[in-house]
Image 1 (cartoon, rainbow, N blue to C red):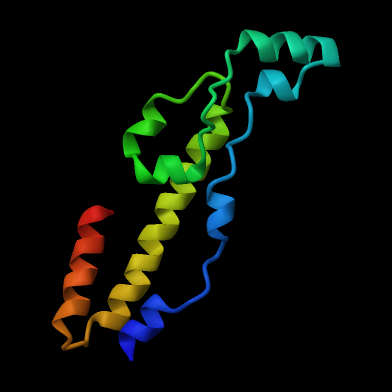
Image 2 (tube, rainbow, N blue to C red):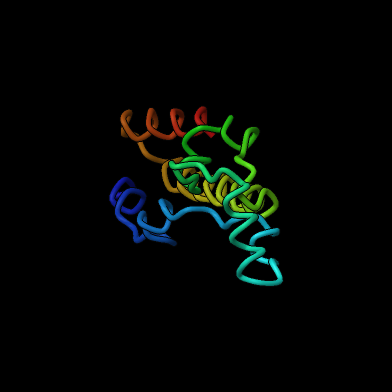
Length: 116
């Protein structure tokens, strides 16, 4: 019963949303005209592979070397909120699994704790 409650719940955001590219840098967002935006975009050497929240959560070192075309403040904030949400979820799941005698659920909980 406990594992059913833990593993079968709707996500807060869809997995598709995790793969969306992080917002562009503020200089692009705040460009005063289309011409300035185009110039800044071309000078930024935008990476061919976009960075997403999924990328940051999958590889914790990615937050240390963000491309210059990404809004670093928003990326860091999204990363911290993503980690905090995972920690909160783990705490909730650990409470559910605390009384479980199922060794596989205990192993899963410890593995998740080590990862976080």
